[in-house]
Length: 450
Image (tube, rainbow, N blue to C red; front, top):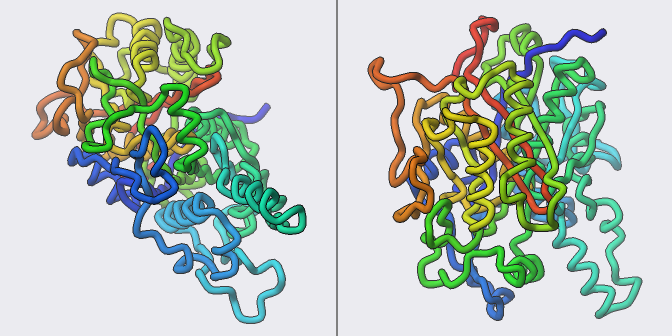
C-alpha cells in the first residue's frame, strides 16, 4: 500500500488582465483595482456585450522562437510563460527563449537542465474549459474562404485543449503523464486536485498544473450573451460590471489568461531546501446532475465538493478561516454558492469572511481556479483578505463579505491568524470543485512563506 504524502506548492506564475506576474496580480487585487475594460477592437463592434478582462503588454517572441510563437495561440503563450514563472520561483532550471546552437528538429520548445526529480515522475496537467478555440475558429474561416488545402496542418497538433500539456512536457522535458483536464469553470481547481492526488498517492513526485483560457472572442461572447450569462450594459463603466452578491448583479464578466502552480511532495521540497508557499491539504469534486447551465438551487454539488475537501484535509468547518468564493456575479450562481456554504459549513458559515476576487480580475473560466489558488496563497502569506468590489447593496444579509477595501488580519497579535482557506470553483454543466490551502506546516523545517 502506498504511503500518503503531504503536497506543497513551491512555485507560482500568472499572466492575467490584472498583471503579468504573481506580484502584479496580487497588488492589483488587494488594492481593489478592476481589470475590466471596454473591448475596442473592431471585431467586437456589433456585440451586445463589449467588455472584458484582456491580457496586455505581453510579448510572445521574448519567450519563444518567432516561428513557434506564430504557430501557437496566445493562450498557449500565456500558459508557457506562467509555467516558466512557477518553475523559476521553485528554483527549477528552464530553457532560454532562443533555441540552442545545433539543436535538432524537436528544439522548438527546448529542453531543461538537470532536475531534482526523476523526469519520468514529473507530470503536467493543462486545465482549461475550451483550450485554443481561436485556432479552430481561424481554421474554419480558412476552410470556408480558401478550401481544404488552406486549413493549417498545425491545427491537428496545437488545436486541442490538451495540447498545452504536450508543449510544456516537451519544453521542460517532463516525462510523466501529460494530460488535459476540462470541467468548464471548475477545470483549474479540479486540475490542482488531481495533481495533488498523483503526488499524495505516490504516482508522481511533482506536478505542474497550468490553468488557461481565452474565450474573449466574438463567438464565445455572443453565445454567453445570448444565454444572458454576461453582465450587460456597462460599456460606459466597465469596472462596475462585476458585482458578486450585489442586488443589481446581472452576470459574469469574461476574462482571459493563464496561471501555473508547481506541486511537489513535502519531503521532496525539504530535501532540496525549497521555499514552500503553502500546503494543498484537501480537494473535493462533485456534479449537480441538475441542469446544463443553472446550478442546483440548493448548491447540492457545490456543498458535496466543499464537504469532501474538508474531509480530505482532515478538517472541520470551524477550521476554515477564510473563503475565496467562486462568486461570478450571476443571480442564480451566487445564491446557490451561499446555500452550499450553509449546507456544508453549518452554523459557522456566516462567521467566515468571504472574498469574491472575480470582481477585480473578471472570470478567467477554466483558469480561474488556479488564479484564485494563487490569490489564496498570497492571502495566507500577507494575512490580508482581498476586497469584493462593487458590492454596495448586498442581497445576502448576515454574511461576512469583505467589501470595499482589503482587511488586515491578526496584526500586532490581535485576532486569529489565517491558517486555512477554502477556494471554490463551479461551472456550467454542474461541475464543482473545492480545494483547501494551508500555511506551511512546521513538519517541514525548510518551509517558509512567500
